[in-house]
Length: 538
Image (cartoon, rainbow, N blue to C red; front, side, top):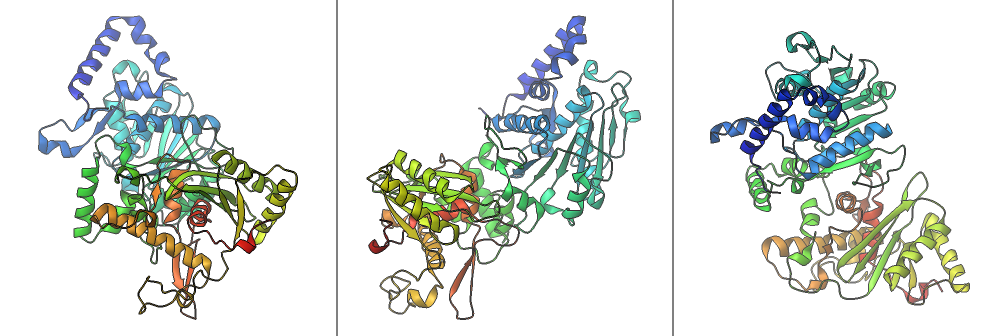
C-alpha cells in the first residue's frame, strides 16, 4: 500500500458520494441501512483523523481516515470480541491510529445499534474528555460526528444538546457513549462494550477490574506497555493472540498486537532514527516500551535484552549463508500443573523453524503430540524437560518404542534444569584462564543454558548492528513466520538473573506479574541440549 494515501482524491470521492446520495433520495434514506453492518466501510467512507503535526507542512490537520491493513484487522478483532462476548486486549506501539479506530467504532455502534451503551475509561479525566482538546477521547468522537454527512446523523440530533461532558446520546435510538476516569471506571452501569484506554498505566487496576466485571462482558484494554507488574501485563501473558480467521478459545482474553512495522509509513530508517535519538537523550527504556513494546525495558537483570532478540529475527536476510543446515533438534517444555502450557521448539542448524504449544493434558498425550510433530519434521533429537510431571515422558516414549510406533530416526534425551552445569572446569570466557570456571558462576544447568542462549543473541546483535563477524554456528536465527512468533519474542526477554548466597547465578523465569515462558523454555532447551548417552531413553 502506497503511503501517504492520496487524501485529495479521497475528499473528492466523498463529495461525489454525498452528491450521489443527496440527488437520489432512495440512496440517502437507505444509507443507514447499508452501513449498519459494515463498520469498515463506514470508517473508510466517512471517518476522519487529526494530526496537528501537519500544520508546519501546510497540510490540512483534519484528514479522511484511510485505513491500512492492520487497522482493518483491528476493526474485525473488536467486532468479533463483541459478537462472541469475549474480552480483548490491544498491545500497541504509539501513533498507530488505534484510539481513532476505537472512537470511530464507538460512534458506529451508537448510530446503528439501538439501545446500546459503550463505555470509555482512562486514568485521568482530561484524557477521557476535555472540551476543545482533540487528544481527549470524547473530543475525537465529537470531531468524528461533526464531519459526518447530515443524512447519517440521528433525527433531531444536535451536538450541543446531545453531547455533554463525558457523554454522547443518540436521541433517535437511545444509544449512549459515556466516560469515566480513575477509580470510578466501571461505576456507571452496564455496558455492551467498554474501552479502557492506557490500561497498563492505571494506579489501582484491581479495583477497576472488580467494578467492570459485573457491568460488561466485553472490555477492551488498549495500551502501550508499562513493565510487567500490572494487570495489563498479566492479561497479556494469559491471553491468546488473535489472527484473522483463527478459531479462538472461549473464556480467554484475546490479544491484538499492533507493531510499528504494521504501519506503512514507519520504515526501518524511521525506527533507527527514533532509537538513536532516544539513546542520545538517555531515554532508550521509554523507546523500548512505547515503540518495541518491550515489557522488560524497566526491569533490571534481564538475561536477553529485547533489542538483541529483535536483531535475530530473520537473520537469514542479513547474511549470505545457509542458516538451515545441520540436524533437526527439538526442545520440549512440559507443562506444570495449574493451567500451564506445553511447548515444543524445533531448530535446524541455528534457525528456529517451528514452534507449537498446547494445553496441559497428561504426559502421555504430551509425549504423543511431541513425537508426532518430530516425525513430521524428521527431527533427530528430542530433549524434554524431565523434572516434575515431565518424568512421565520417558515411559510413554518407551511404550511407543515397544509397540513399533516410534520413528527410527528420533532419539530422546531427558533435560533437567536443576542438573549440574556442563563443562564445569571450563572457563566462562573460552580460552581466558583469568575468567571464572562454569561451576563457580552458574547455580545449575538452567542458569548456564539461559546465559549461553544470551551469548548467542548478543553475538547476533553485534553482527547485525556493528558488523562484528563470528562463526555462523555461534549465532541464532528466529524466523518471523514461525507460529506464536510474537509470544516467543516477548518470552525470550522475560527471565531475569540474580545471585544466591554462594554468589552463583540463578534465573527467575517469572518476574512479578508474568507466567512461565513455555515457548522461551522450549527454544532454550533446543539450543542447549544436555546429552549424556547413558541417559538415552532406551
